[in-house]
Image (cartoon, rainbow, N blue to C red; front, side, top):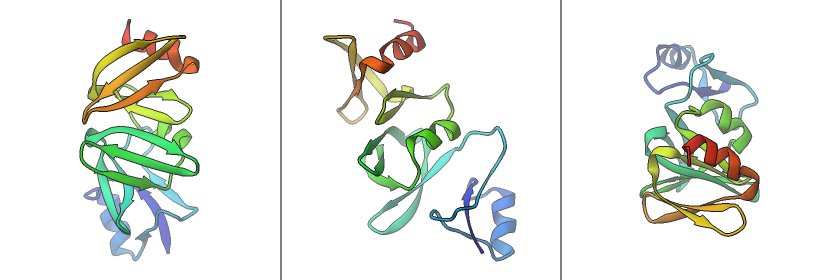
Length: 146
């Protein structure tokens, strides 16, 4: 049987499920994860191969149309999850939604630039810019304390 496992690769439950014949399938309708524990990795695809991307390496995540892309310093991975779901599995002390299409890792913000009309431009690790839109302006400002 195929299930989606949101467990660390070395988690004892994952190992037991693997031994019992369960296979990790990112497209499965069934999901297993630890209750009230945030993910330490996300599953992503690159070059038709499946990877486990450490959340520490994630600079930001963006949604473009129906595609969700995980950006690290050096690579991009396609993710099968929607941003709304990713918000629930990522640690809110580290990750923050800054627009309808972006979640950023607060630890990878290098500089914050004020823009016109209640917007910020975040300069992230890897010389990438991410906009904080007006809808998220006050949430971001209060969170960062500026």
